Every structure is written in C-alpha cells, then in structure tokens.
Image (cartoon, rainbow, N blue to C red; front, side, top):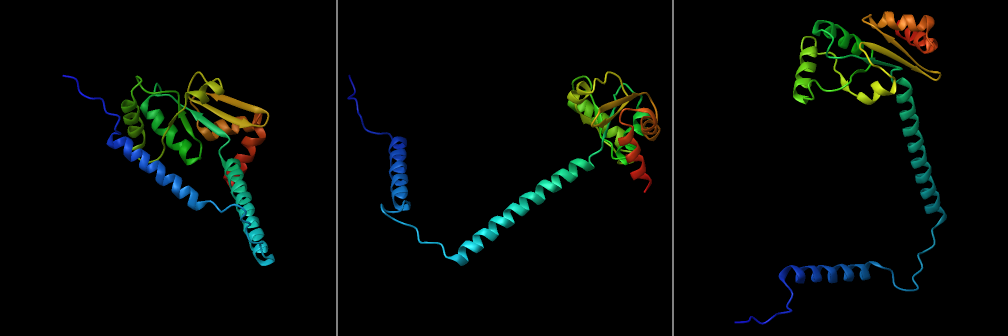
Length: 194
C-alpha cells in the first residue's frame, strides 16, 4: 500500500515561518516612514552631546593611562625555576620572588600531569601561603633559558640572564653592577630601599 505524499509543513517549519513573518512585521514597524526627517538638534542638546563625547574620550584616555602605568609598574624581572630543584630550595626561592614582586615561571607540567604539578605547587606554598608559579614554556624559549634557577632582567637594550642558585637580591645587585640592564636593576634596588 502506498501512502500519499504530503507537502504539508511540519510543526517546526510552521513555527520558523511564523517567526520569520513576525520578525519582518516588527522590522517594518521600527523603520521610519519614507520621507521622514529627524528633528533638528537644538543648540542645548548639541552642547550636551558634545560634553558626553568629551567625557567618553576623557574616560578612554584615563583607561589608556592606567594601563600604561600598570605596564610600567610590572616587574622587569622574571624568575625561572624547575621542579628538578630540591623542594627545600624551591620553598625558599618561590616565596622570596613573590615578596619581591617577581613572577616565577616553570617550563611545563610534572610528568605532563596537571594534578601532580598543582599538588607540587601547593606543597611549596602551604607552609607560609606565599608564592606560586606560572607554567610558561614560551617565555623560557623567548629568553633562551635552558637551566634553572635563572633570573632575567628586561630593559630597552634587551635582557640579562643570570644562572645559579643565588639569592634574588644578590643576583639583582650583580646585574646592577655589570649587566646590560644595569640601570633597570639599579633603579629597582633604589626603589626598594625607599
């Protein structure tokens, strides 16, 4: 037995057509009629609009200035560590960097396992609640850091890298006396003395 073919619309198709028709009707209602001219803006309204635009430009400039100031306040230093460093050493290094406002980076996950890495970071910080590390292999590559610990000091001339297990303040003092970025390191040390 053959069933007659029907060209009737399904419920979904009917609903979609109904929605399309309603949308078209709303659009027709929202458009101004042909030949419509908006009223002229009074001088008082124009002054008000101009003041709003000026306030908006001022707010945007203020936001740009704030962003620039924040960038300038960011640390010129980056501290690179590794979980191959004994835990006792990391428990001293990571909080010291945090207290100095220096971001601490690791190259990747322990055994490619986020949970193991998070547990290791927690173990480093649980005693004093200070510190933490960021996983950032790109920055390791950017500065050519192949061993840890390493301290990078960035400046307009480029950057300095100091390798070795040395207190951060001592490392910064070394760079301040002989690095390409000695001025940045020296200025930072002076600002910390205040």
